[in-house]
Amino acid sequence: MSQKKSRKRNSFRVDPQSSSSDQSEDPSSSSERAQNQKKNKNKNKNQNTNNNKNKNKNKNQNQNKKKTKKKSQKQNNKKTISTFQDFSLDKTIIRSLKKNTIETPNELQKVCLPKLLTGESITMTSNMKSGKAICFLIRAVELLRKYKFRQRNGVGAIVVCQNHEIAEEVNQLSKALLKNQSQNCGVVVEGANKQAEKKKLRIGVNLLIGTPQRLLYHLKQTPELITTNLKYIVVDQAEKFLKAGSDFELEEIFKSIKNRFELSQNNSDQFNKLQIVITSNKKDDNVHQLHNILRRRPKKNQKEKEKEKGKGKGDDIYHYIQMKEKLEYQISENLTQGYVICEPEKRLLLLITLLRRLSTNSKIIICFNSIKSAEFHSEILSYSQIPSLLLYNKMEKLEKNRNILKFKTANQAILCTTCNTISNIKFESVAMLVQYDPPIDEDEYLYTISKFSQYNPKMRTLLFLQPIESHYLKSLKKMKLAIKEFAFPKNLFDYQKKLEKMVNKTYILYNLAREAYRGFVLAYSSHSRKDCFNIQELDLLKISKSFCFEFPPKVDFEKTIKRRNRYKRRRFLNKKKN
Image 1 (cartoon, one colour):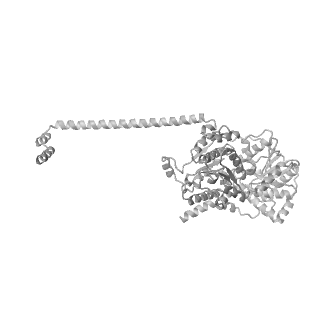
Image 2 (image 1 turned 120 degrees about the vertical axis):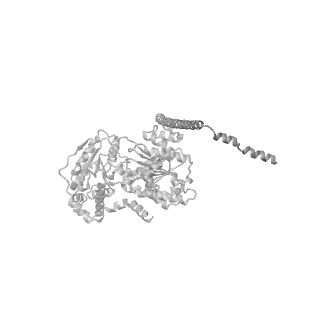
Image 3 (image 1 turned 90 degrees about the vertical axis):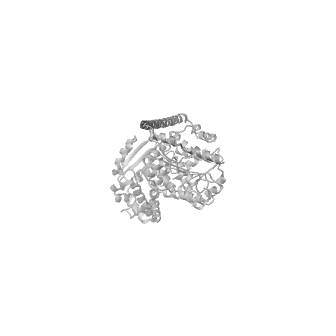
């Protein structure tokens, strides 16, 4: 054993002769070694630089290849997408679309549908009647079919509409798409019976359509409504919610849905996974912010946005799609369009004389900017022995249907309404459409004219303007509308003093006149075209006489503004508390 250990130790030893020989080498050999080492280092550096260059070239080549692939895929998609079958939809959905004569998709549908079908949240901005409703309803029907919803599962998709008429249109289209499916749809609207709606919700509704106030009522006071399986929400025509100041109602709807998710143990994180779709007819910067507002998320700085660009898709990111098509209104050539420049004192007297002369065997529609002004003028016309009907959005459903039937069946009738209510109803055999107040939305006004001209090609239109508002005619002529000036009648019915006495005596008429005056001034102040419709140029004394007042009444204009800015104050107070 001792011999073996000694051998191992000797194997690790170094001979003194070898060490001395290494130290006694020539200096020339050491210099050569140093030169060789430098050469090897330079070679390695050159090789590394060449390798890096090759890597960068390969990266650029791969990036170019990916870009070319994406471009080719987009071009192929544009070429291949010619029917709804190319979206890989179910056969039952395609059959129901063909029955409604919807066979080929629009440009908007070609862009939006592939993103909707993958579950991405989107904001769509395009013109009126461009096929937005078909896009979000196809996604809703396919989602309900995919997860095999039944009545016991509750609501899987919600569509929020502003008006009763828009909700009914969406309901009719959704029923047509759900004919061959096992799912169902329901409507929840203001003016309808609440108990009948509760019975439907107890049985079960998979696709729920409604207005914001009634949806809020059912979410808070009907516990039978099941929303724990909700996966899809649509806000239709969001710019109208922002104009009316009812966006705080949308916030409360989403807040109540979030509270319901938190109460259920299994579905606590499902609120952040909801697919939200927002549609709008006009470009608006506030529409961009609705996604973060509705999800109860704070605004982000530019630095935070730049950081998220490289991370990929997340819950906060959504797609904004805008179509740059111009509006094309199809107005019949036989339609005669006219205007009258009248002073604000004589507006009401001119309207009464016009109705007295033209109301024999003819149907006339009068449009106002606010509901209160429509109510006031309908009652004053009835006091002056000119019977008239009333129609507006927040009216009860039974009364609304009665007035529509009366106007359609009658040979001689006068209807006082707003532009929002008429734009989605079919009226035939109409002789004249009168725009008494200046139209707030030009596109909506032109859309109503084009729609009425399809069913009433020999109809006449009349627009009331003040001498201050004559600049508005230039903008209408730029849209290639043939407008003529009608002659102002000389002999007007002098009912001014009688109407003023009547309004001062009757309490109901006085309150209606005061609220109508306030609504007119607020609508005038909120007009987008302030170069033509400027409040500072108005003579309020003359305008008050058109509402049967001797002097302008005392009115609080701040009440409505407070309601519109209520949600901003709540946020400000919550920040202070935190």
